[in-house]
Length: 56
Ligand SMILES: [Zn+2]
Image (tube, rainbow, N blue to C red; front, top):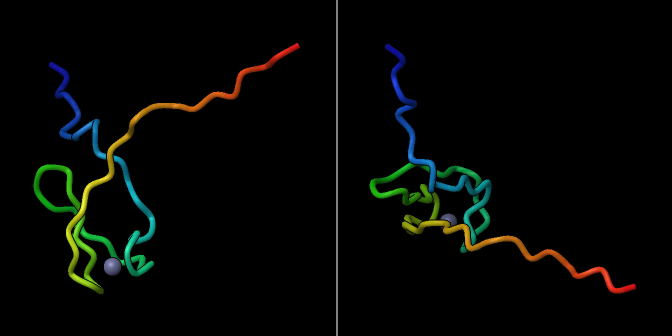
């Protein structure tokens, strides 16, 4: 039996708080992140890739 990874695949990992720029982020419920500096809770959602068209 292989245990599935207990992860939330939709959770993106921010490296900096988008509001104050602090790096001390703590995971919260529902894929959210808490900035321990400004106490804001936010989530990061991956929309897609913007691939530039190559026109020749
Ligand atoms: Zn912050």
